Amino acid sequence: MPSSNTNQIQKTHYLGDLKKSTDTDVCLAGWIHKKTAGRDELSITLRDSTGIFEINVERKSTSPSLLKQLSSAAIESAIAIRGRMKNGRFSPTEARILSPAEKPPPFNVSTLKALDSLDFLKERYLMIRHPKMVTILKLQNEICAAVREFMRKEKYTEIQAPIIGPATDPGIRGAKRVFFDYYGNTRYSLMSSMILYKQMAICSLERIYAFSPNIRLEPEHSRLTGRHLAEFWQVDIETAFATYEKAMDLAEKLLKHVCKQIKERCPKLLRQLNRDLPVPKIPYERITYPEAIEILKSLGQDVRFGEEIPWDAEEALSRHFDNHFWITNYPITARGFYYLPNPDNPELLRDMDLIYPEGYGEAASGGEREYEYQKVLSRIKSSNEDAESYGWYLDMLKYGVPPSAGLGIGLERLTRYICGLKKVWEATPFPKVPGIISP
Image (tube, rainbow, N blue to C red):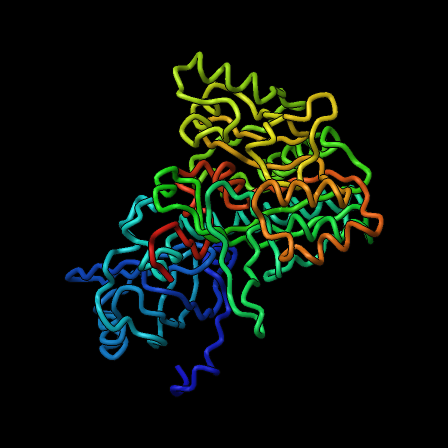
């Protein structure tokens, strides 16, 4: 193999394409997944983003220098191997360790079966290499593509979500917001939700969506639910001049489209996860918050009217239904100032949560927006929020902001559901789990 200049390394084939190549010279590159040294043969399992391939090297027919090079390569070293592919068998002729593993890894990626343990979050740089993790991230890529495909078909425009701002969503169920000094303004915050900015955007485009980042410092015990992250992404959707019924209809069609496309386009990836993904039937059942409370009480759950449904009760309700379902009309005491009260019963809101079946819990949250200046100002003050920090938002409401409805669908939770994962931190490449310091 040419000199030590890695620019001259030309990977010619991905491992997943090798079976298509017969009687040809190839250069493979990847990571050493496993290695077994026998008396007559050295076996190296190479891994790249497309799969795993076993290379068997016969000692008696291989040059001593090549044997030495391959024998010295440690697990997880990045390596390039040149040779000839013939009749499905690869015969190496040259090898170079491109980036050696300096010490044995804290765990062996090739033998690790489960990815849901919190113990490995500090070594995410190794966990992300796991073949299961590769499969999950490929499916997440397909999920994002299917979302964009559907939203474009529905004539929605994708916008870029803000990451920082002078005000963000305060209605984040006990989580803390992150504030920082922004050129002398010490009350700027990282976005916990772009909900206020969606009302700004619909004054221009009417039908918008975004993949938006969210930072919420959830209480540490929330990690026990298996579905909370301190950093996550949402598919945020907003429609001007729309009701929450229209938003629910749109979300149902979107999730059906995504599940259907994943099932049809990615059967091999789903099989690798042993996931028999159901395509949800629409329309979903819709129950009101008061009805949900009554069901939970019948299931023996300790719930009180007027509060958010506790996470464990929500999981029990999720297991009670066989298909996705909506909970509508939460009490005004349980949600943020931006939701519109029901004119027939001002103590309840025109809002909703979408719940997955199988115990996966909340999928999405949204509703109709309060859009009149005086009413929003009154709600901000009654919720003990600082009206001054919402200055731009309140000023905006004086200039013809329309009624609207929208929702946010958690991307990691959607990935978790589609992949059939135990924990939500399996559904993201760089998880930030509440209370755990990790990369």
